[in-house]
Amino acid sequence: MRFGIVGLGRMGSNLARRAIKRGHEVVGFDQNIELVQSLAAEGIDPAHSLSGLLVKLPAPRIVFLYVPHGGPTELVCQELREPFFRGDIVVDGGNSHWLDSVRHHEFFAEAGVRFLDVGTSGGVQGAREGACFMVGGDHDAFVVVRPVLNDLAVDEEAVFYAGPPGSGHFVKLVHNAIEFGMVQAIAEGVELLKRSDYQPNLVGLFHNWMHGSVIRSWLVELMGKALAENPDFAELSTYVEDTGEVKWVLKWAMDNDIPAPVISSSQMALLEHRDVRSPTAISVALLRNQYGGHPVHSISRNGRQ
Image 1 (cartoon, rainbow, N blue to C red):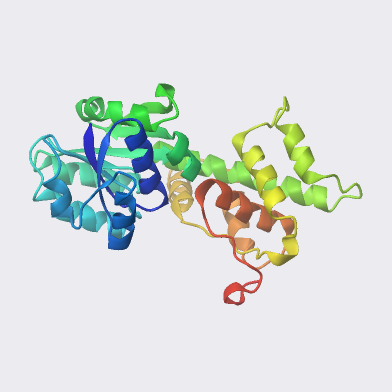
Image 2 (cartoon, rainbow, N blue to C red):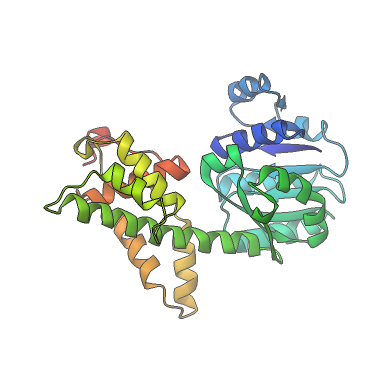
């Protein structure tokens, strides 16, 4: 298939590379024109504007969005609707608020354009080697786009139709909330080990846990990798980047009187880590860097501890 990707950052560019390897043709646009040109050498058909991207696509045109949620996504949706034709499909693969996605579905439907909200999991590595997708929106549009998603996914079981508009992004945000709790538990385990009298080889221990233990997982694997790459915690800041999406889920849970104590505590701990030096905080930052590419700050950067 031939489709477009708007936003060629860590996720968009790597998904484009994977699509090309699987035999698809990708037209790419990003505000960073130099980035677009550099990716042209890897097989991406470059576009220098949204209108330039659209004229290069056959009907029904399919355009994936991998831009930051909020204002940037809103702007791209506004610019796309008028030049789109009836039957075209917009796929928002970012971490948008699910109610924004419901609104965007209605906004495009008024012009006869179909809209899918697609939660994308797996981080940068998943974008390169096969991601996991959770899809909300019109089922007929999902049927059209599914062949592309199947090839971008780690396997066909990694493509899940969640239901009506907004459901794809909602279940992805719940996924992110679960992730917060798991990351916090792993990071606290690192601190317990570091503060113990035994001082085991943490890289070796996490490798051991990947072989038959109850807690074996990709996050445990990534923690071991991060520990191997960053043996000296003293050089790292405890400041943990937060993109904010889990706060949306927690607000919804509070509004609906649904208890989520582990997720709430992990969100509060993430904020607390910005001011308190601890191996837990550094471990959270290292893990978020491993799976999501979130920056890890040095102890002196921007004056942060």
